[in-house]
Length: 200
Image (cartoon, rainbow, N blue to C red; front, side):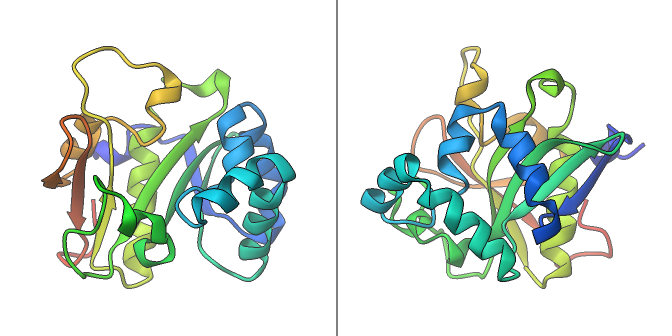
């Protein structure tokens, strides 16, 4: 079984208006996700901070989904939504460009994986690899030449709230390579999507 299909029970689908309720289900068990709504890299800091209190981050998410924008993937087990992977063009997430550690390494129109959210009962059950595999396939189908991610590479054990971007080892196992490291624990890794028929 390919490493990306480690959990064959997970079905991944791009978010769409009819699946907004499923996003609510996944985010409901994570306070950070319920405030962020994948707005952190899209909005100015002041607007983002206000959005965590007034609900405008959530409203922006819904508006973008209803407008047909790609924001990420939902993972389903036995028909129930259990996980989220935020994946979208890097250019649509302007705060990445202003980040000291995660700023672009070049001008390639790559896509970026920015977060993972998993319902409590399904954490630490091997969902990262199938989510990353699905994200790579989605990005490739939309013409992206590469997929980036920003995992944590720390020597100490990490809590679930610290690893929302994933940890490094699974990305390397799936064929990503490190292309930059501007801080000791936060590499930028990239998967080339231009080779072959299947990205992973």
